Length: 248
Image 1: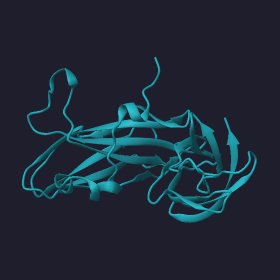
Image 2 (image 1 turned 45 degrees about the vertical axis):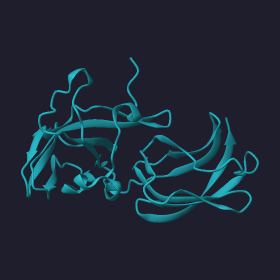
Image 3 (image 1 turned 135 degrees about the vertical axis):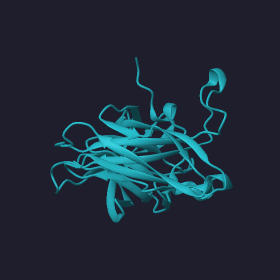
Image 4 (image 1 turned 60 degrees about the vertical axis):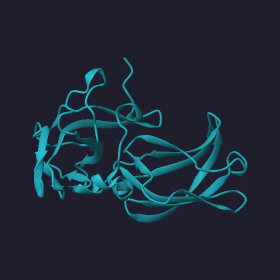
């Protein structure tokens, strides 16, 4: 059976876009927005703060996070558990979700997870054949750091034509994830193109991720084998790089 992709499993509302959500979403604040387990660390916590005048209800699920065929893939995790898995956050109060790593909490390579927190309206816990009615969903990345404290990402950038669209492919040949923030590229005609003004996404260690480029039909990448200038924030640090032009 083919594993469901990230898009199939999650219609994710990222915390960085919270300002764009309906006013009800502002009632719930989650901290931190990213979790890192240090080597040997067996537990961590997420605090949910309810600023509203009514209680909030929800569920917490933990997924192992991988990347295949250029896309994110989630599968239920067995080595990290959340407690409690069902939550009730009272009005004007908070609750802590505890994340526990099973085993000895040692790992030679970086391990990655996603914590999905679904807000569920009270009384809608059983929504017929369609399943649970979800009001909002938050996705929190979790990284179990590798044993090597000098681990770092190493990115190879490619611009290519695929399925009728221009794509940006990022292969991470390093041993640590890369959080890719604001990103822009310069076309062969010298024009600058914003790929993302905020968080673009993640390229996990040893994996490849692809994104569709938001360019118009007149985008000029130049000839295959050419190089395009890339500027991006990688793990919050601005970097300059080059993307090789390819075609598929």
